[in-house]
Length: 128
Image 1 (cartoon, helix red, strand yellow):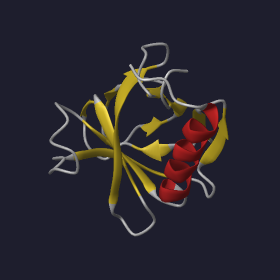
Image 2 (cartoon, helix red, strand yellow):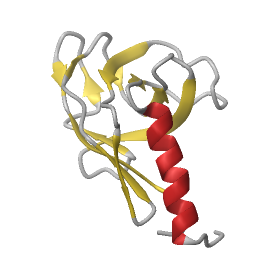
Image 3 (cartoon, rainbow, N blue to C red):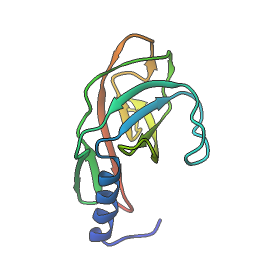
Image 4 (cartoon, one colour):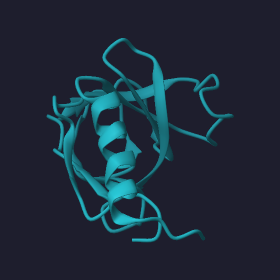
């Protein structure tokens, strides 16, 4: 893995923060498609804050969005963030709390109609 200067890592994470602020977080089952590809059925949708989070030491830590109601049952395995216009920005991994995904949920086995919480959401750039 390459090693990047901390100021560059912070700048890259700040650019992501700016891009997704006020956007959406969508959860999906199955395998991630090609970058920006057709995601399939949305399991749940969260509104991202503006700003979406804070950057420190090459890490973007998001402010947890308000709970969402699950719209379709399934096991959340990946997620997509869009900007405020709905354009694709980034795809991420999902797990239940403590499972190692960039996005951690109270549970990743979702049942339609149930409220869902994000318990952790962060991205680390480079070698941190």
